[in-house]
Length: 339
Image (tube, rainbow, N blue to C red; front, side, top):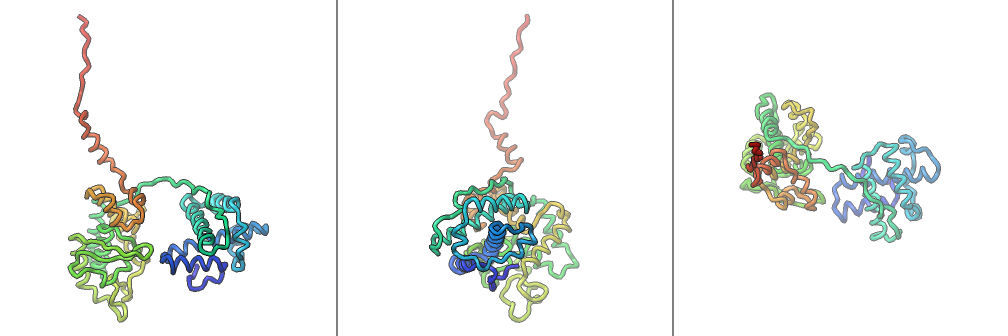
């Protein structure tokens, strides 16, 4: 595991990069950690390659990289980056998405070295195309599956956290918020009239999420019994764990998995993020929501990220075909007169 408070195992330039991403660009801890994981693997690979050392996983873990200096990074070539990407595919079995992320990490790191540190002149990853990712439609629950999932929670007579869990699932399925956004909600983020609440999205960017009637009712029901979870010092968090602390990401993932199983949906690879996809898909397909409005609801930076939800269901395509003005036109074949 990498601890952001102690990056002594990393070269100074990488430590500076992590600090820049965290402090100046306000990147999330998860994003910074992903950069560090990728750069650590790349540096270990390069040291092993240069010195003719073994490249198996266990040997790479033992490679020291803390002393790597400007000259090391200045001498990395485009061919080295290609070798690394090929290695990650061939030896580590990295898929397209993973290889693309590693390439992006190297590219962004070198851009920082060029434009901010001014210690290198060339970006060895600049001209390497990212592996093409297979386009996949976002996996989501159907309306009936959403109803089944919520009903399982509502009818759970043994649960001591029923109101809380129901509220969590309702917000996911109606608002399309991210997991990190949900666990980060505090009481002060909720509008007094329950019309909206504030979440902190990627890059520490705030946005307002508006609440429909289902969310308002679920939120009110939960707030009535929320006090029983409280312990001193944690009274600002909206969602409280059984230990009296702000609910964790892992706890939410666990309860979502639990209820998906009880609803008979355990074999469909649904997750908290799929609930976000569900909200977005249902809003776009059933609610006739404009794609630009959906972009703002989801907190996407770019419109092309949101456009994945513009896929059309089979039902929609069937209805579109029926709207063709020629749909009911049937021209009978003329019969030849053999008389």
